[in-house]
Length: 250
Image 1: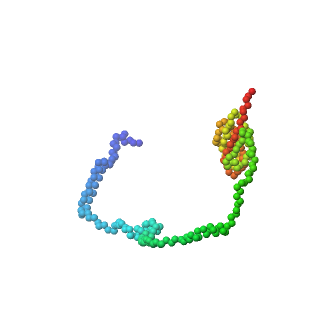
Image 2: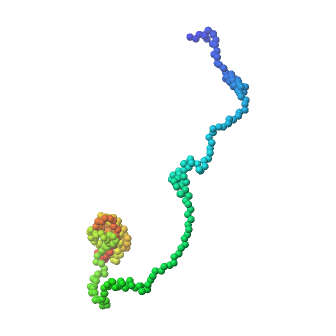
Image 3: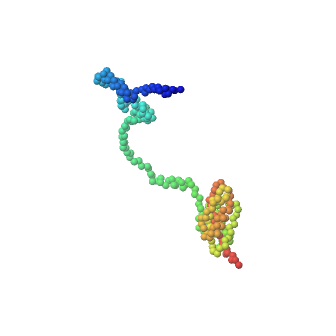
């Protein structure tokens, strides 16, 4: 138990140390003493620079320097004065050209006039030519009159043109007659046939002017089957239409 306050005794004060002002004063005194010692005992001789010795020197090399020539990347790849036959490659001797003007008198080939037809005469004498009798009145050739064809076609027909004509049809195509009161122009369809003989493309090149006829031509062209071949073939199918009068409904 702490009975000091009860007995009336005073507690002793602790020492707090030097203050900041006291520390700064001591430091300033020590710094001033150092400066005074330096000025008092330091040398007062004038500073003389030392002489420079054994310093690397830079010197520009000339073009004739052998070490500089070794850094040339074309020393062994291209003709060089220091390489094999350098003077012969880079300093060839100059050759003087001397023009020579000379002429020769003309020498004409002999051409005797008595021998001009000798070659042709020899050819005629050594070759035999067969004689042909001239027949000024040849016999008349008898010919039969051409068959008389009807003016109008009896059925509609299909023609194959182009390279496709060399490939025969596997099945005959029956082109029907169309009911129309007038004549219909042909429908021309361009087709592309593959190697197997099937039609893979159809294009109407020339229209007949009658839509039903053009549609029928495209449908018949798609249904056509040709003989197999080693490659694809282009061609034209021309449909010549026969028209019949339309049947009137009762």
